[in-house]
Length: 381
Image (tube, rainbow, N blue to C red):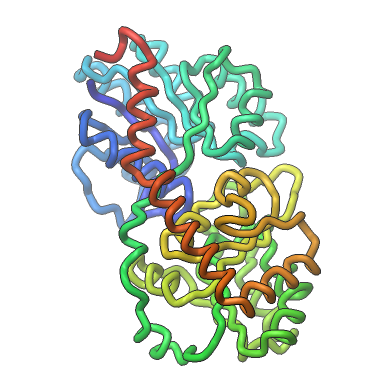
């Protein structure tokens, strides 16, 4: 059986959705021939069976997806299932599936269901009821999907996967030395700079107390403005730099920008604790938090807020600590306690790594997708 994936989000773009869809495409290729239709990219790697329009733009992507999808489906009757990478591509996926009588599976991630636009809800999300399966990345995202009246029992929760072994290599001590961070307790944030991430608020309202009580604490920030995002346009990188300067944190904070995978792994390895101070915001949600799994795979626990799908990524009190959003006093207290208590922090990290390996490895996650395909009945042979 062949599958067709239609997705706006795909490498070389970076982000949680991109990682999920790329991992899904690679995993399904082990047992199925897989085609991918995705958006324009200047630095695309030219992978076989990955099709892109020749110029950028959302409308161009939609038109190209209809054109290329129709050709692929007409020429390849073995394609029995069309995957949508997010709710954004629902109209294209449903139209092609209805025209060529194929089954529909769509992945949803949180923001693509919560985006606060009446036009979007009317013109896009209404198509959700035509999907045979809706795969949510967390129980929270699943609850959002169920509220949009899909087919009965169509919604299924399958978390993102992770190549955990790439994060579990020995600690790169030379990296810490090269960065001049020997003897420092390292906090880490990894992600795109969306407003909901709460970075500026964390720096202003929690980090002061943290460095007061743990003077050798150092905060590494990995990521940048989401230039490819359709929803996030704020220049938060400049805002964060301004906060660091105004608060006098130059000796305690370093912004590393976006990193190549090999360098990112080393940064996870030299860190002591991940922090994700996500805010509860109307119309913008944290669907899961893939960086939490990456930190866990490197043996690092996370302190995060109890928002959106984050509780699916953290087993509270075992693989990390969850606090209520905007309780900056509790964030500070929790971070300080873990930085000062190596035994507790290392125990949390050890459990987090075991959980990442046993529950979120891509081989396990792809196995759940294979079961989903089998559940589609006589269409999958």
